[in-house]
Length: 314
Image (spheres, rainbow, N blue to C red):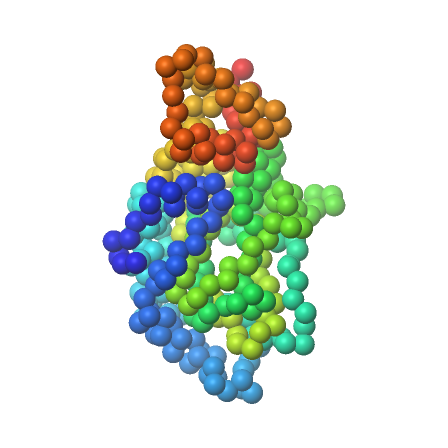
């Protein structure tokens, strides 16, 4: 992909539905090679001399050389972030994190995960990106994320808006599982080649994992925040529409509005738990198959949002 890369409608829909999007071979080899040289120089060791490997994990304060070579400024990502944010998302940094080989351990899916983007911690960022400097296989310390969990986090904060400042951490019997509907079984390893990128919404549950393979896992992270993030009204806002401050007003966003204004679109949508029934009120009203499929995705993952919005209209 190049600096004028843009996402397809299907890719945007996937990102909004599942909270992540994997982009194969997004980053060029020259950038990867440049970062490899930088990181080994910083660590004062090399891939070929495992006897000199350190135990440094997160490189807080790491400085890219030159600064504009940072992942957050890579042209292939810049054009995509422009598309998703419409110019409102700005770089907010990100550091390398290394998972060194621990072959004496046995691998298992980490649990629970956690979220980063709430008003009392990172300030609300909008989107993150993760890439690797070397291929990562299963059990190799992959970045773990829980697909669709951004809906659960959004639902939790709609129900508990005062907790967006991080006070949920002090609630009785707190568990990170409140931000994920399937914490035990839903985790997914980002197994990828060097230069592949996973984009992730700021709300999904995610976590690191141990590396039981031979090679260290060296991951670069990047984040983008909204240019209004320091304004208190923005920092602690929980919009009914998860995509209110995004530029991707695709089918899923449109469908959320259709669902809320039921009788005005010649369609009635009835929710029963996570199931839905569409009753067409006029015989001439037709929906394309794609639209119906996206409606099912949205309704399955966002039933609470619809009910919350509808109740606010009463």
